[in-house]
Structures are given as structure tokens and as C-alpha cells.
Length: 507
Image (cartoon, rainbow, N blue to C red; front, side):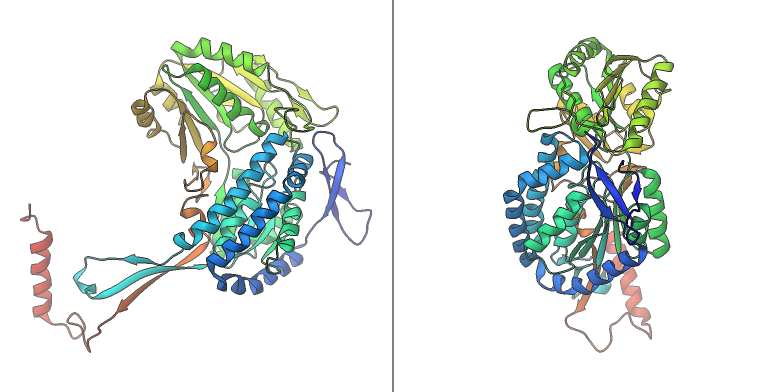
């Protein structure tokens, strides 16, 4: 039985089988939560949320410290869970654990500051003497719908700032990788979190739709197509949502780049997590003067990459393809490229016995008539295109409906910064790729069809709050001069003041 099949041998419950993508073996089964069960979970969360909010951000931070220690004590168990259901290399799973441990620390410490009251000043003469400030309240119940490519980071990882802001969370993980999320539910219980503040509901698309129909806020990570549907339903309900969607992230190698650095960044950016990342490097543009040297060295490095099932640290570089339909997408993109004149320098084949693997694939002689350069591939492939100059590279990088992330490799920082400002992407890294994702103080969000809202930074926690503005008249008179019945002399004075303060006579 594959994970896409439904097990109905038990007439009382419908279950989904979860398999190990690297072997095909079934490693668990999950129940499918109905719309009524999702609504019940949200109702329980809504009842639990006020008490969680009332303890304040500092007390929640202390709870996070306890959870952080649980992660340290159970790190191998978490890593094994991720590797088993996702099929990735153990090193890739370690990064997920590092992310959540440091996220507990960051949001636990920064939440009091980021959620604190903020004083506001105004130059208007009509509010002289007023004290003004903004304050924030948690939204209520945050529904998180996670993807299959990162069972911990993009599922439970999004719950951490939402919880830090005082919300309750109901998490619906991908039906392909739900087991690590259920492990997090166990963590919350063992760390003494209040009951129902964090819950997991499992199932497929209908379960996620039910969560969108009942939560007070939706955080969704996944395809642009599904993201549109989530945003549409959130709009109908007039609830906020945050979306991280597709990407076709470009890397530009400038003529003055360190070729060795460029090769390493491109290789890791393309193959980390088997290329199954929204922030994967999916296309490379190289200035002509360094193109041959870059491709030659990159080809050598591709041939050194180890592909296979992870059996521990150092056993493999690229793991399995987690999502069965994604294999077909990768195959389609390579076939299309070859039909249009591209060449495969390394890889290019599917390996399916046992498990689901795709060889790390290096493509050259590519252009924008090919799907591999314009559509999201989401696999261990890297097409490389020669360009005459950086201006052409920028134009081609921006020739995309996506705008999640982009990278530039070069030694001239002034030039690299100028080019970065021309890229139509929510995140740009210079001489790096993807490392910004571990910088919690730095916002990350997509432009164009890559999403709405942002992870990380102040917005990464404030988006989970409602904003209230407060104006206080500390020394109220019985009647202000601007009030009805109007005083012409007062308003003449206001007009003269405007001219004196803001008029063009002031130079």
C-alpha cells in the first residue's frame, strides 16, 4: 500500500497509510479528521486560548524554554521521525531541529518586546495634549496547514510565533508527512502546555479546508494554486491569512565571483532537501566570461554527490522524492528541456526500486522556452544558462510569475547591492543561498505569486495579532475649540497656522 491509498479495512475509521519514500514501506497510519472533528478541535482551542493569552509572553517564554530542552533530549527521535516519513538526508533533518530549537529561544525572548505597547506621536494641532499608543491582542485560534517537504520547520515551526503571541494553534500537517507533527503534540503534553492550546488534526485536503472554514487566522505553505483557494475562502470569511507559495528562485553568478564559492552555493542551494524547497535555487544565470569555468567545476561536483537512503550522518547527500506526483513533474521538465535543445551533463533519471529517487541533474543549453526555467520544478535539478552581462541576468531572473527569493554571487559589494535592488523578489542573498531562513530577525516573504505576508522579523509574530490604537485625552476641557458649534475665529487661526508652518514661504 502506498501512502496515497486509503485504508478502509476498519469500518469505523478511515485511515491514510504513511510510507517511507526511500523504501516504500508503510511506517504508520493516520486517521482522517472530518469537518465536524476539526470544528470541535477549533472550539476546544478557542476555549483554551484566553488562559494561554493571560499568562503573558514572559511566562510563555518559560514554557518554550522547557520545550527547547525537550527537543535537545529527544533530538535523535525527532530526526529519525523526519527522515523516516520525508526520506531526506539526516543532515537536512538536523537543520529542522536546529531551526525549532533556536525559534523557541528567539520568539520566547523577543515576544515581550515585539508585542509591547508602542507610543505614537502626531503633529496635528487637533490632538495636542493627547497621549497615543498602539497595543496588540492575539487573534484567537491560528490554523496552520503545513507542506510535506519540511515536516517540522514549515508546520510546527510556524506554530511557535503564533503561540508566543498568545494564540492557540490547530495544525494540519500534510497527509504525506504527519508523524512528526503528532510527535510535537506529545512534546506539548510532556512539557506541561495547557490542554488544547496546541492540537494536531490529520487528514487530506478536506481536513485542511475545514480548518480554513473555522480558524481565526490561516497560515498556509504550499502550492500557488491551493494558496489562491485558501486566500479566496479567507476573504469570504474576512479573516487574515499568510501564504508562502511557489518559487522559481534564481542565482546570478557575476564575472568577478569566486567560482568555487559560486559552485558550492549553487550546488547546495539546488540539492538541499533534494531540491524540494520553495527557496531552492532552481535556475542559474552566469556571465559569459566565467561560464565555462563555472559549468566545468559544477559538473565535477555533481558527480561527487551521493544519492540514496539515509542511514545516518554522512551516508547520503540527497534523499528520496517525498511526494509521488513530484517525480512526474521533474521528469516532464527534463524531457521538455531535452526536446527543446538542452543537454544533461549529470543525472536525468528516476530510480524507483526501492523507494522514489531522482538523480541530481545538471542541465545546460537552456533558455526560457523551457519549463525547467519558468515553472517550479521542486526536485534535484539545476539548469544553468549563459548570459552576456548582469543586466540580461536581472531581466531573465525577473521574467517569472514567482518572486520568493534570489541570490547573487560576486566580489564587488556595491555592484551586487545595486543589482539586488533590481530583483523582483521578497528576499535576496548575496554570496549565499537560503541561509537567511535561519535569521529570525529578518523578514521573509514572497512577491508576485509567491505569497502574502512574511515569516520572521517583527511581522512574523505581529501578523498573529489584532492591532488596537488608543488615544487618551489626559486633560479634557468641557469643550474643545474645534467642536460644534463652530468658531470661525478658531478655524481662521488654524488656516493661518497651516500657512505659517507648512506654506511654501518656509525655506
